Image (cartoon, rainbow, N blue to C red; front, side, top):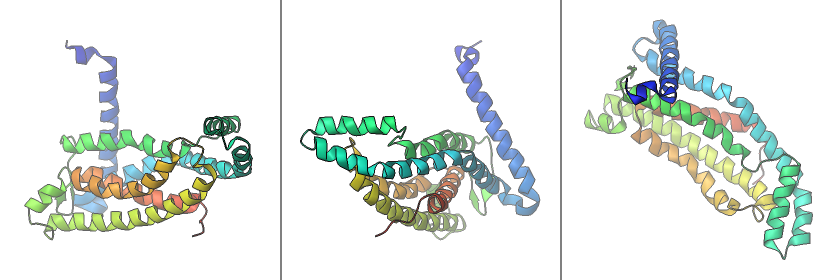
Amino acid sequence: MSASASDPSVTSAASVTSAFAELVDRLADLVQPVFHGSAAAVAVVLFTVLVRAAIHPLSRAAARGQKARARLAPQITELRKKHGKNPERLQKAVLELHAKENVSPLSGMLPGLMQLPAFFLLYHLFAGGSITGDLFAAPLGGRWADALGDGGVFGAAGLVYVALFAIVGAVATFTYVRTRRQLAVTGRQEQPQLPGMGTMAKVLPLLSFGTLVTVAVVPLAAALYVVTSATWGAVERVLLYPATAR
């Protein structure tokens, strides 16, 4: 017996992968009478919705964390006045305040981090050929480069990616605008005191456009996950976060 075969972690990972593959297969069988050849693609979308629904409580917690940080703004202002000439003491005092109030400045990152395992599992399943299927004329295991080589941008498969890029571009632009507004508000309250928040405020809104690159290079099934998740995230942001003034 090989070392990998006897390794409990390897066996556990294989079991998880098999369970995910079975779930996607069952979802595909469920919608096959309606969507026929695109049933696997629809199953990926449904799988993504299930993942996002499962981590929705974390998203709600992140929204509550933002409101809590806004509530601490007056106290942070007082700390700024008290320790303004001592940046290190000011930073420590702000972090202590967050700890005392059980507020994490990084809680908003948890929903994104929790999605990574599901994304990589889909990537593995379709890139490795464990699950096959098509979205119209584009195979779920293929990439944009394959579509370009088989008919070009406006070929049958290329048009599938054109539609995905259009959706991702619209969602990314919407997310970019709302994230900038949100950080403009929270940044005035916290940015000077927390390490790295200044850089984060500049870079974080631009990350929404990274989905365009992801869609272009990963297998189509993983790209569908990204597009569906990004769209869910945009709707969720509208529902969980109050509109911010310009």
